[in-house]
Length: 283
Image (cartoon, rainbow, N blue to C red; front, side):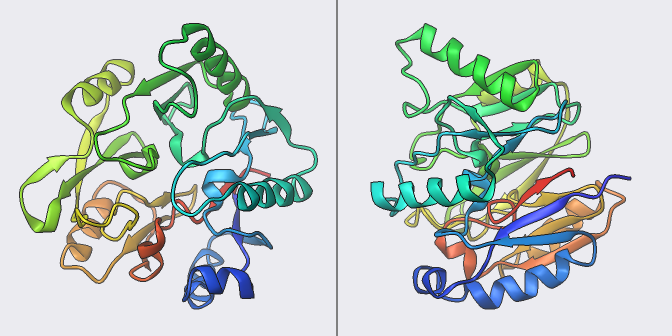
């Protein structure tokens, strides 16, 4: 059985200033991860390592570094440049991937033949088919997949990361269903997007109720679909909400792996959960 190495951002005085409570969360979460995997901490300016650490080619195991250039939250040009510089220092052998895409905007199918991503203007211009084709070529080269399936960025989504909408748990597609202030329940992806996924990769779909507050677009509190599945366990975010037990049960019913519940109530307020905070590599 393979055993991934899990990378995270090391708590520093700087990250604690930007994300109060990160050090306390890190200590508890790393203790849970270390029951199953080796954990390596990198001193980085930001904690959402899924977005900016290199991706790994599923065929060769090589690392490729897309160009990190987010246009959301508090990422200034200086801050973004500092992230890129420190990542280059930590992974000097990573090959360049000439695509502007965050790692949180990539979800692979279980057979590793396809990648689902949300379309964003920062990745390619919709009016430029040649640019889109070039980005697809670069991503297929970096990821080792055969096809890139683009889904439209949803209305009101200011970040555009697909790992806040769907993930695979084994061969089961786990989709988030939003309940705004515990009101009506709607799928986080529209029906057209769901159809494109089904057409590209037949799946059994299961929904997790994600009670996301409509007035806080940055917070990931309630985004249960942002879990982390490794070869040895499934790490499920918990938010001290009434849906915690039910969503953990849904995950447990669709895997034989241990389900580890991770308290993300405070850290999620800053924009992510366990998937966003980690990057796993086969070594």
